[in-house]
Image (cartoon, rainbow, N blue to C red; front, side):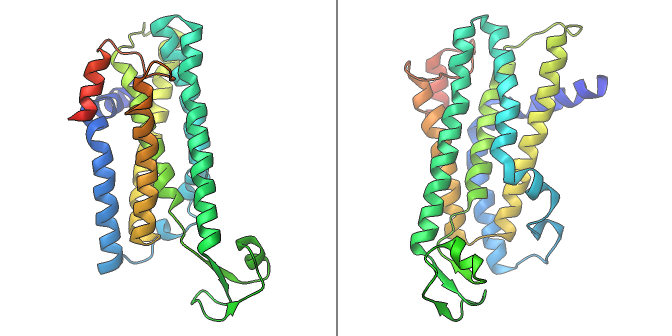
Length: 262
C-alpha cells in the first residue's frame, strides 16, 4: 500500500497541476509535428513499437476508449459523491462518459467514411494495378487487394482525447481528502495510479504514432479532432448550466473560464 501511495503522490503532483491541463494540448501538437518531421526527414529504424502488433497497441490503444471509460466510471462516481453527497449530480457528471462515447463513435465513423469515399483498391501495397470491382475496403481486402484512401489517424484522435479527458477529470483531486484507513482512500488511490499510468501510455503511444505511422496531414486532422472533442466539451459546453458540468472544485466557474482564455 505504501508503494501505491507513493506512485499516487507522484502522479497527482504531475497530472493534477493546472499547468498540465493548460499546456498538454500544445505539447501534444508540438510532439506530433516534431515526430512527423522526424519521420519524413530522418526515419527511425524499425523497432518493436513500430510493429502494429506490439502489446501496447493491441491490448491498450486498440481499446483506448474502453480502458478510459472503465477507469473513469468508478473514479468520477467515487470522487464526485465523496465531495457532494448528491447522487443526481454524480449521475449528471457520469454522463460525460456518454458524451465521450458519442464523440468517439461519430468521429471514427466520419474517418471511416472519408477513407471509403477517397479510396481505391489496388493489387499491391505499392498502389499498382487499380482494381475496378471492389466497392469497399472490406470487399477489397476480402479479395486480396490493398485499399488506399485518406486515412485520418484514429490513434492521434483518440489518444489526444482520452489523455486530455483524464487530466481534466483528475483535477477533482485538489478537493478530495480521505481518511487513509478508509476503504474509499484505497479505492481512489488505486484508481489514481491506474489512470496516471494509462495517461502515460496514451501520451507515449501518441508519440510513437507521430514517429512511425501515417503522414503529416492524417495526423494533423486526427489530433485536431481530438482537440476539438476536448475543448468543445471541457472548454465550452461543460461551462454551461445545461451540461454534465465540470469536476467539482472550490474555485469559481469564472476562474475556470479564465484558465482557458489565457
